[in-house]
Length: 305
Image (cartoon, rainbow, N blue to C red; front, side, top):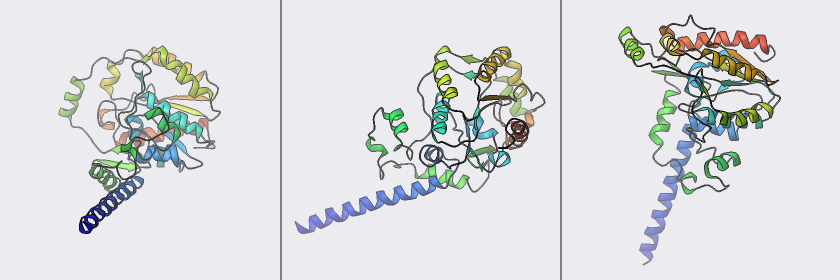
């Protein structure tokens, strides 16, 4: 009986030690991978630097803005696959973080697709202790078991290791303070295929978005800088609602602390060589875009850029 107890106790110690080691290893991989969604949400909700210029948005934010070219204080919080609901969720947190500088928000020319619907795409494992994240994810201030240390990273070691490696070896992507710059260039055949599958594009802003947007724009005196970036030439041809986009830009500008930089309208000279696909700039295009953006930002807020 005593041998059985020793065996069970040893097994428990080994199991707990293995879970703890796995948790520590994964946590260190994440915290040393600035492009990891887990790192970004942890930084934004639990460990934001005092003076930071956050860049918020979807994969277009992640791929288009090169923070090191904008400011030493800039960090790219762009999340692949996220929509405007998540961008506004992050904007509310950036406002809570008490920094005094500007906040950059990526605004895609297609606007706010669909109705205002809760939908989060980022990984919030390390940020789950933040009350606002708990309330958003679970509706209460208690963490479910799959967010507990020791269990939360189960099955994610390969993904976190890959993210950590990509942070150091630029093969298809280059990481820059949270940005993931695409090193892809397409040949003529690839662009022909991409262009053949681009359909008519429209602008959308449902009435259900008005109250959440108004809440974000009126709860801070920090400069909110909305930036509309470029798309590939064929996509532009299929976009038929430029007046609607311009009307929405006027609406954003009606808020006292809001600025809008429309580089979608002003970048008609961008070519396919600047893009990795129809809506994402490659590294060459991102550098060009960021330099243009910085010049315009310097005109608006010379003390910050």
